[in-house]
Amino acid sequence: MGRRLALVLVALGALAATPVPAQADITAFWGTSPTPSTRSARGISGGVNLVIVGFEVEFARTAENLAKGAPSLTTGMFNGVVQTPTRTQLYLTLGGGFFRERLEGEGETMFGTNIGGGVKVPLAGPLRLRLDYRVFNLRGSPRYSTPQRFYAGVNLAF
Image (cartoon, rainbow, N blue to C red):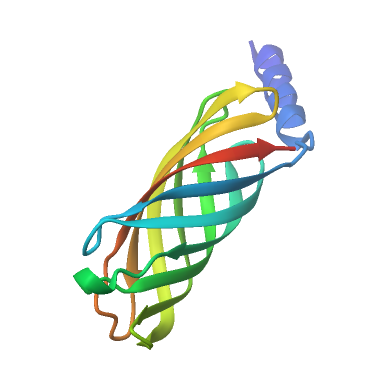
């Protein structure tokens, strides 16, 4: 019994010590932000993922709507990612970075955080559909401190 346990522990240790190749991906996305009115949002993100954890850098811009008093929002975020090690990947993300909110030339530039999640669905080969939802928490004195964003994007894994 003791030998089997030792053998299992050694095997598990060898598996844990085996290096896992990192995967990278890039996503171009388009979506909407309903805060305070529905406006288009677009951006790009790139990331490096190990089996379950990873990191991504994201840059996005939400359009201004003068008629509804909705400011533009530009974000640059660095996020940690936790994801399922399956073909269709569910993920959660948490991070922070800068934002710039502007309406009619006036605005706020400061630090912000975000939390969100989504799914990456395989399409063909390295192409995947990425669906994502984020909630931002903007510091300083922005007009809207907790904007949200939903997007769909084309993700390329390599």
